[in-house]
Length: 128
Image (cartoon, rainbow, N blue to C red):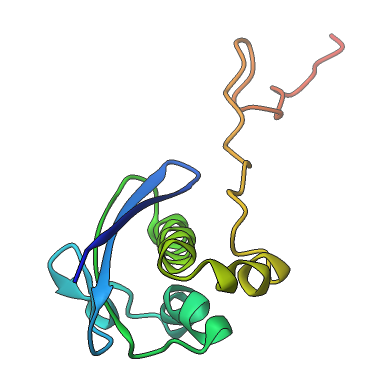
């Protein structure tokens, strides 16, 4: 019974995923994922990889996640679980790839520019 170790990232969130065969427990930062993500949509994101591959309840997953906000963390976990499932069974890759779960989302926050209040926003222009 080997533990599969993968990494998922999204924005500034990093999720380290440790998956082994079991009865479907998902622990995030030493808490159940339902208490860590109280919102149903985020719980669905965490479960999405299992739902697509119909492997719900077959693996126990322990996840350490840090950085970013809850949405980025949920999506980082989703990518980490998808990668772990492919490591466990390579035949699941086309299913996950078809749903876009194998792709690292490259979108990051644009940096703030000097002489402006934000990345794109400008201070109010005054002609006189």
